[in-house]
Image 1 (cartoon, rainbow, N blue to C red):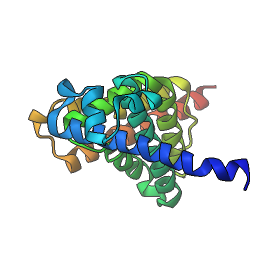
Image 2: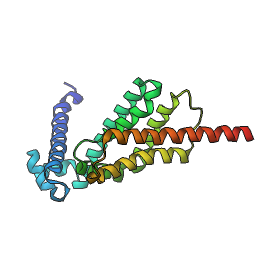
Image 3: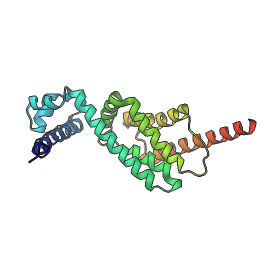
Image 4: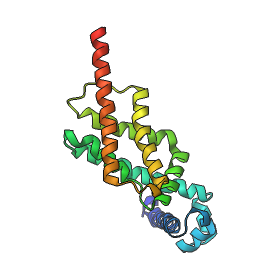
Length: 205
Protein backbone atom coordinates (compact mmCIF):
# COMPACT_ATOMS: atom_id res chain seq x y z
CA UNK A 1 0.00 0.00 0.00
CA UNK A 2 1.44 3.37 -1.00
CA UNK A 3 1.74 6.39 1.24
CA UNK A 4 -0.82 8.18 -0.94
CA UNK A 5 -3.28 5.31 -0.49
CA UNK A 6 -2.73 5.30 3.26
CA UNK A 7 -3.45 9.03 3.44
CA UNK A 8 -6.71 8.90 1.53
CA UNK A 9 -9.01 7.82 4.39
CA UNK A 10 -7.57 10.55 6.61
CA UNK A 11 -7.99 13.14 3.89
CA UNK A 12 -11.56 11.99 3.28
CA UNK A 13 -12.37 12.34 6.99
CA UNK A 14 -10.80 15.79 7.08
CA UNK A 15 -12.84 16.88 4.07
CA UNK A 16 -16.00 15.47 5.64
CA UNK A 17 -15.27 17.49 8.78
CA UNK A 18 -14.76 20.67 6.76
CA UNK A 19 -18.00 20.01 4.85
CA UNK A 20 -19.88 19.49 8.13
CA UNK A 21 -18.52 22.75 9.57
CA UNK A 22 -19.45 24.74 6.47
CA UNK A 23 -22.91 23.16 6.32
CA UNK A 24 -23.49 23.91 10.00
CA UNK A 25 -22.41 27.52 9.49
CA UNK A 26 -24.85 27.93 6.61
CA UNK A 27 -27.68 26.41 8.68
CA UNK A 28 -26.98 28.76 11.59
CA UNK A 29 -26.80 31.79 9.34
CA UNK A 30 -30.17 30.86 7.86
CA UNK A 31 -31.89 30.07 11.15
CA UNK A 32 -30.32 32.52 13.60
CA UNK A 33 -28.38 35.12 11.66
CA UNK A 34 -24.81 36.35 11.83
CA UNK A 35 -25.23 37.97 15.24
CA UNK A 36 -25.42 34.63 17.07
CA UNK A 37 -22.84 32.89 14.93
CA UNK A 38 -19.89 31.72 17.04
CA UNK A 39 -17.32 28.98 16.62
CA UNK A 40 -18.78 27.17 19.63
CA UNK A 41 -22.25 27.19 18.08
CA UNK A 42 -20.84 26.03 14.77
CA UNK A 43 -18.90 23.16 16.35
CA UNK A 44 -21.96 22.06 18.30
CA UNK A 45 -24.18 22.08 15.21
CA UNK A 46 -21.51 20.28 13.14
CA UNK A 47 -21.08 17.59 15.78
CA UNK A 48 -17.36 18.21 16.25
CA UNK A 49 -15.27 19.45 19.15
CA UNK A 50 -14.13 23.05 19.25
CA UNK A 51 -10.55 21.77 19.07
CA UNK A 52 -11.32 19.91 15.87
CA UNK A 53 -12.87 23.03 14.38
CA UNK A 54 -9.72 25.02 15.15
CA UNK A 55 -7.60 22.38 13.46
CA UNK A 56 -9.23 23.41 10.19
CA UNK A 57 -10.12 27.10 10.69
CA UNK A 58 -8.46 29.84 12.71
CA UNK A 59 -11.67 31.73 13.55
CA UNK A 60 -15.25 32.46 12.49
CA UNK A 61 -14.20 34.82 9.72
CA UNK A 62 -11.96 32.11 8.30
CA UNK A 63 -14.98 29.80 8.10
CA UNK A 64 -17.07 32.47 6.36
CA UNK A 65 -14.23 33.15 3.94
CA UNK A 66 -14.04 29.43 3.12
CA UNK A 67 -17.77 29.44 2.44
CA UNK A 68 -17.33 32.44 0.18
CA UNK A 69 -14.46 30.71 -1.63
CA UNK A 70 -16.58 27.63 -2.23
CA UNK A 71 -19.48 29.69 -3.53
CA UNK A 72 -17.14 31.69 -5.77
CA UNK A 73 -15.67 28.54 -7.30
CA UNK A 74 -19.13 27.11 -7.92
CA UNK A 75 -20.18 30.41 -9.51
CA UNK A 76 -17.09 30.51 -11.72
CA UNK A 77 -17.74 27.01 -13.00
CA UNK A 78 -21.40 27.81 -13.57
CA UNK A 79 -20.64 30.99 -15.50
CA UNK A 80 -18.03 29.24 -17.64
CA UNK A 81 -20.41 26.41 -18.49
CA UNK A 82 -23.26 28.77 -19.35
CA UNK A 83 -21.14 31.10 -21.49
CA UNK A 84 -19.82 28.15 -23.50
CA UNK A 85 -23.33 26.83 -24.08
CA UNK A 86 -25.19 30.13 -24.58
CA UNK A 87 -26.26 31.36 -28.01
CA UNK A 88 -24.94 34.76 -29.01
CA UNK A 89 -28.01 36.79 -28.15
CA UNK A 90 -28.33 35.27 -24.68
CA UNK A 91 -24.69 35.27 -23.55
CA UNK A 92 -24.83 38.44 -21.44
CA UNK A 93 -28.22 37.56 -19.96
CA UNK A 94 -27.05 34.09 -18.96
CA UNK A 95 -24.00 35.52 -17.21
CA UNK A 96 -26.29 37.90 -15.30
CA UNK A 97 -28.55 34.99 -14.38
CA UNK A 98 -25.60 32.93 -13.19
CA UNK A 99 -24.30 35.72 -10.97
CA UNK A 100 -27.78 36.44 -9.59
CA UNK A 101 -28.21 32.80 -8.64
CA UNK A 102 -24.62 32.20 -7.63
CA UNK A 103 -24.89 32.87 -3.90
CA UNK A 104 -27.29 30.67 -1.94
CA UNK A 105 -29.43 31.49 1.08
CA UNK A 106 -31.62 34.27 2.39
CA UNK A 107 -30.79 37.90 1.56
CA UNK A 108 -29.11 38.24 4.95
CA UNK A 109 -27.01 35.12 4.42
CA UNK A 110 -26.04 36.22 0.92
CA UNK A 111 -24.83 39.56 2.28
CA UNK A 112 -22.66 37.84 4.90
CA UNK A 113 -21.17 35.44 2.36
CA UNK A 114 -20.64 38.10 -0.29
CA UNK A 115 -18.92 40.38 2.24
CA UNK A 116 -16.74 37.50 3.43
CA UNK A 117 -15.90 36.68 -0.16
CA UNK A 118 -14.93 40.25 -1.03
CA UNK A 119 -12.94 40.57 2.19
CA UNK A 120 -10.98 37.42 1.36
CA UNK A 121 -10.70 37.79 -2.41
CA UNK A 122 -11.99 41.20 -3.43
CA UNK A 123 -9.73 41.83 -6.38
CA UNK A 124 -9.56 38.27 -7.68
CA UNK A 125 -13.30 37.65 -7.57
CA UNK A 126 -13.89 40.83 -9.56
CA UNK A 127 -11.31 39.63 -12.07
CA UNK A 128 -13.22 36.37 -12.46
CA UNK A 129 -16.47 38.23 -13.13
CA UNK A 130 -14.61 40.48 -15.57
CA UNK A 131 -13.37 37.44 -17.49
CA UNK A 132 -16.90 36.02 -17.60
CA UNK A 133 -18.21 39.25 -19.11
CA UNK A 134 -15.36 39.40 -21.60
CA UNK A 135 -16.15 35.84 -22.71
CA UNK A 136 -19.83 36.71 -23.06
CA UNK A 137 -19.07 39.83 -25.04
CA UNK A 138 -16.57 38.05 -27.29
CA UNK A 139 -19.30 35.89 -28.82
CA UNK A 140 -21.40 38.95 -29.69
CA UNK A 141 -20.64 39.41 -33.38
CA UNK A 142 -22.49 42.73 -33.40
CA UNK A 143 -20.10 44.27 -30.89
CA UNK A 144 -16.66 45.13 -32.23
CA UNK A 145 -14.79 46.47 -29.25
CA UNK A 146 -12.01 45.71 -26.82
CA UNK A 147 -12.74 46.39 -23.17
CA UNK A 148 -10.20 48.58 -21.44
CA UNK A 149 -9.36 48.22 -17.77
CA UNK A 150 -11.67 51.05 -16.80
CA UNK A 151 -14.60 49.79 -18.86
CA UNK A 152 -14.24 46.29 -17.40
CA UNK A 153 -14.15 47.83 -13.92
CA UNK A 154 -17.41 49.67 -14.57
CA UNK A 155 -19.11 46.56 -15.98
CA UNK A 156 -18.17 44.14 -13.24
CA UNK A 157 -18.74 46.50 -10.34
CA UNK A 158 -22.03 47.71 -11.77
CA UNK A 159 -23.51 44.22 -11.76
CA UNK A 160 -21.97 42.74 -8.62
CA UNK A 161 -22.38 45.84 -6.46
CA UNK A 162 -25.95 46.45 -7.61
CA UNK A 163 -26.83 42.84 -6.76
CA UNK A 164 -25.26 43.24 -3.33
CA UNK A 165 -27.31 46.40 -2.79
CA UNK A 166 -30.47 44.54 -3.84
CA UNK A 167 -29.72 41.79 -1.32
CA UNK A 168 -29.07 44.39 1.38
CA UNK A 169 -32.47 46.04 0.84
CA UNK A 170 -35.04 43.21 0.81
CA UNK A 171 -37.71 45.66 1.93
CA UNK A 172 -37.73 47.03 -1.62
CA UNK A 173 -39.16 43.68 -2.76
CA UNK A 174 -37.47 43.96 -6.15
CA UNK A 175 -38.78 41.53 -8.73
CA UNK A 176 -35.84 39.24 -9.73
CA UNK A 177 -36.90 39.00 -13.38
CA UNK A 178 -37.40 42.75 -13.70
CA UNK A 179 -34.03 43.34 -12.01
CA UNK A 180 -32.41 40.89 -14.42
CA UNK A 181 -33.94 42.77 -17.39
CA UNK A 182 -32.66 46.09 -16.07
CA UNK A 183 -29.14 44.74 -15.55
CA UNK A 184 -29.07 43.27 -19.06
CA UNK A 185 -30.28 46.62 -20.45
CA UNK A 186 -27.64 48.45 -18.43
CA UNK A 187 -24.80 46.25 -19.68
CA UNK A 188 -25.93 46.04 -23.31
CA UNK A 189 -26.58 49.79 -23.51
CA UNK A 190 -23.15 50.50 -22.07
CA UNK A 191 -21.51 48.13 -24.56
CA UNK A 192 -23.35 49.72 -27.48
CA UNK A 193 -22.19 53.14 -26.29
CA UNK A 194 -18.61 51.88 -26.04
CA UNK A 195 -18.83 50.53 -29.58
CA UNK A 196 -20.19 53.81 -30.90
CA UNK A 197 -17.41 55.72 -29.15
CA UNK A 198 -14.77 53.39 -30.60
CA UNK A 199 -16.18 53.83 -34.12
CA UNK A 200 -16.22 57.60 -33.74
CA UNK A 201 -12.64 57.61 -32.51
CA UNK A 202 -11.57 55.40 -35.43
CA UNK A 203 -13.29 57.73 -37.90
CA UNK A 204 -11.55 60.77 -36.46
CA UNK A 205 -8.13 59.13 -36.49
